[in-house]
Amino acid sequence: MLKRDEWLDLARKLDWELSYVSEKDAFPEVQSGRPWLPHAEWAGWDEPFRTSYPEYVAGQHAKEASVAAVREAVGRVEDYQRLPQGWLEGLKLHAATLPLAEFAAVVGNLRAARFGRDSAWRSAALLGALDEMRHTQIPLLLMHDLVRWDPQFDWTHKLFHTNNWVAIAARHLADEMLLASDAIEFAIATNFVFETGFTNVQFVGLSALAHGVGDKMFEKMVGSIQSDEARHAQIGAPVLATVVKHDRRYAQYLLDKWFWRSWLLFAVVTGFSMDYLTPVEHRQSSFKEFMHEWVLDQFLRSLDEFGLERPWYWDIFLEGLDNYHHMVYASAYSYRASVWFNFVVPGPKERAWLGEKYPASWPDFDPIWQRITDRWRAADPGNDFAVHGTAIVTFCDLCQLVLSNGTPRANAANVVDHGGQRYIFCSRPCRWIFEQEPDRYAGHKDIVKRVLAGEAPGNLVALVQRYFGLDYETWGKDAFRGEYPWLDRRPA
Amino acid sequence: MIPLYGFLEGDTIGLLVLADGDDSIAEIARKLQEAARLRAAIEGPVTVLYDGQTLDPLTTVSDAGMQPLARFDVRRGPPA
Image (cartoon, rainbow over all chains, first blue to last red; front, side, top):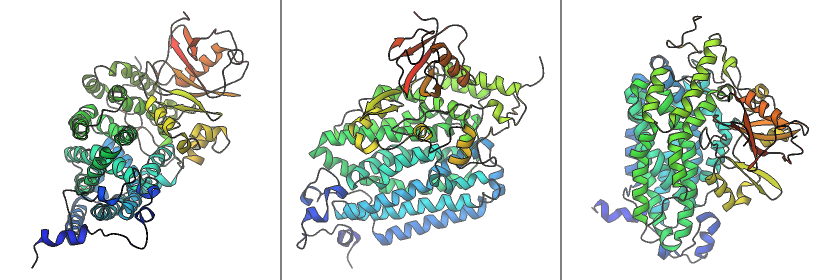
């Protein structure tokens, strides 16, 4: 009987010379990506897992059984009801942004499974597509039972089907990265930057946080997903290596573009959870510390390995580590009815912790939370609209997120005229990405432009209800109705 | 109606300010401060900046040449 290594490549690395069609017709650049190279340049492609299909099925079966066992033990509504309120809000945020983005990643992986330039790449991408199907199904299954308890969990499935501003931003990213990318851009953007750089390690950090707060089900879910991500993320590096060899400039461009785009969404989703929604006694590190320890060190080492430069905006990014998620959280808190999860006001203990973790920037944010606290002190508990913004907020024409980059002292938004239209960007990197491929982005309307065109209501309540898809039951509120033990409403 | 992007010093987000052409610069600064006051406020005099220039608070939006979707900033302190 043949040993594994003797038969394995017959199953996963099986390319042959085409005779009925040309290689360029079978793997057109529009689907396979650029630089277009003959297969000989890709023939050495390999990744470390080298998983066969029977091994994949056996491994996934065991993982599924393990998730099912934990669900059986601690996946009931009453198990969730015991978790800290803030953590549950972070759960709603993560649960909604994850599954349908993963479903879009099925498409991206399947494109690579057909148009990737080497059979081993295509085999690994096919398993990646099956992984992503699983990552779609697990959160949908786990959160489904919670809908009867809390209808905000319905947004696990609903978010991407709405015109909610977070959905518009998430779709703008996911459509380009996962659905529209050719196989090479998908491998570098998704497998290398997003998965290797961000989500793979994010899941490790989130799993540890979940363990700390006692959310065994979430811990199991992200741990299980992470073990798949760790495998299919390996597709990225060998693709990048070949692109660097033949077109270093393009490789650098893709890295610069996708690191920035990934960072913005990552900062909102994970930054909120780590620095605001997880109870302070369960936090293990700040979001900034986590980024330095788990993301930056590894990313910079990877750049060195490939002989690539740090992105040109590195100083802007580092400033963002101190500011961006704080800017967006304060903004989103004051427009919380526009999203499907609830928010927590940082109290004295939390503000002291944030001040210690962010000594350079927190002095600019602390007065904002003092104003919000003072407003709650003067308002009745549960009267959310007494502590809520009323003006229409503004959005970036590239990332579609709010114009909250820079610092409270100097917002980084900048305006550009292109093709007779005016565009505004939250940051110089978003503007730069737009200017590299304006035809790709120019036709997309942000929410302000939809309002001005009469496609969306200009009144905030109507916008929230009729366009963002929320109602009183589901729109975001203060998680504690403004009733905090540290907030004294007694008259002086 | 001229839609403008307003940024108040100390705030965390840009806000849409709907101005009339004959609104004074002081008036659009007031509208922005009102819209942002949940999060930030400037006590005392302010300066309005547009296109790198300090605007006279008494001039109008039209006379200042502010186009739809232009950015203006309201900053702490009197005009220099």
